[in-house]
Length: 269
Image (cartoon, rainbow, N blue to C red; front, side, top):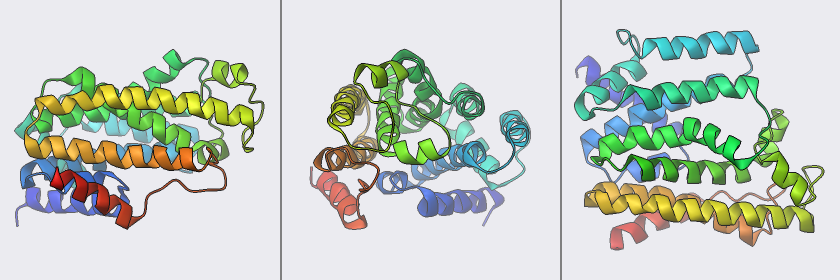
């Protein structure tokens, strides 16, 4: 096994162990595309782990800036060896990878978002950028819809992880919308909270529907991969709605059986 093949084995192992949804989507891709998407995921995971970790802010900043610098240097570990090979094979641009790091750095500085326009800029970095990086692997130039789809998935993450993020001192829901719907404090399911979350759900679905138009520009297996990602996140959004938007005490995460059912439905179609 070559060093590059070993690096790809390592990033795929990370993806299987850590990716709650990604791993199910990429299983339908051909080997080369599956490995490349796993390399992107492993890099994004490393950025996220640093930003959400327990190191002091200055140490986090140094590590994130180091990750950004290493994109331009010789690869020194499995993630960067695999990512360098994937970038060369599929023309993955540098900019979205840098944007991922900038999103991690932004988490060190900003814990509140005044408006949705402000939040959208953050989502473009931490999730839209993943879509833009991946679309090169899929073989499409529909960057705009890839960006929109990434934003849709991040909006669902934000809804799902309100309590977890609050524990980290972060509130991603736009402050003006919290005020408009009369939500004064997080942690309680009230009519005001349900109205706010229903509004967030409609926005997420609109982004999801627009982003899914990306599949029109993809080959069958890449389209199936994207459809599975979207189906898994749509399932979580459905579960939140069924739970009356109680994201504090009830889980909206899908079971392994439910995830495999989404994959099976995609294969049947």
